[in-house]
Image (tube, rainbow, N blue to C red):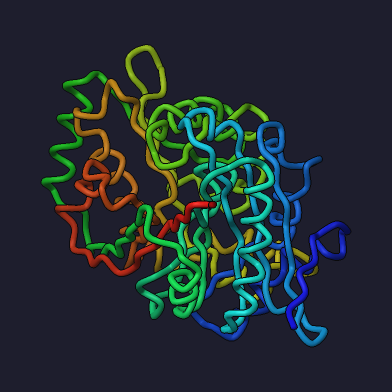
Length: 374
């Protein structure tokens, strides 16, 4: 018999936050979340998203053992923006037992019905910088730090529970060349000159804080039409800065400004830290913080392409080529072999066109599922 327990105590929350890492500890491709970050994400006192959203977390127990977890989110801000009445599910993990998955999803679905909502979709988090998309293809490839890992059997459970595809995100693995193409450099130089733009390169982390506000302004502008997106508030920006600053190597951040020194394009990439997080079992202490702090400077073979944003006014002027060329220069210097694009909506042709001139494979696919609530 399966028992569902709503998370109420700090001990329950730690069990919830650490469940994925423990479940996939022996799966080489699975990169864990930082447990401390997840504890903060579901703490209303530490996550500003609770200003416009509600969340409940649930644990499944069978024979006295925790065998699954799920969280529900009601984003009033997203429902208002997109004119929908939906509840989100996120952080869903379970053993290969239909009784367990059914009980977990029932807990969130029932909450959605009680709240007068008419559909449930996910996995999708509090905002576009949160986790989204269940892995449905590409299980044999290493995940990246910001994405979800799950077993292949999840998708069979989803179909059995009555969920259907809503949208898919795809990911590419790019083979980094031995040198940057002269063509890319020539085009980039021309784009900058013709549009009176310049690239800002940073040397030290403290310089990044000067530009953080402007970086996220560009992100908000670039992402406003993405699936389920809500604008980041100032407090949310501070939260994500504090979470990500540890893993940043500023050499791999490219910023473009116009003649008025206004930020018009950004590219944030990170040398992979997934292996460091896995070796530390998702924990910063006692030694995880040192491994993760050092990882971006240890010249790993993979670069993770986290964020790209170009203001609407400049989207047809070739800025993505400039941003990627700048990043590739640094990757070539470090002898990196691969770049991981991260999830892109399969119908976002503009973003996908950025990679058409690169040697790449489309190797992973993630799905947002949806189900009507009767």
